Image (cartoon, rainbow, N blue to C red; front, side, top):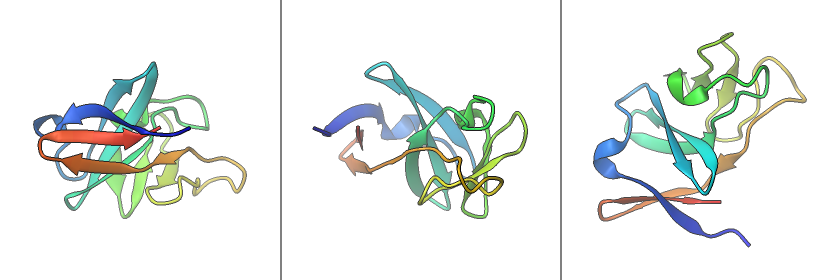
Length: 102
């Protein structure tokens, strides 16, 4: 059963156009900031395992820093492969707490 878990506090969130890595319950999650809207997704690139949270956001996609693969921030689907993608998680902010549903 999925439930919300605290992953960070608001002051730790990434700046505009960037991602950042966070660990919750032994999972590394990427939180991306696109124009002030935050999105949570699996941090491991489906292509070669790169750290998505170290990449940048570009036109609604999280770009992996290793090989430039792009993953849609809403669906997690890859721009380069119809069969590869990453999980996207529901995220909410309550007060100063950032919560992700895993």
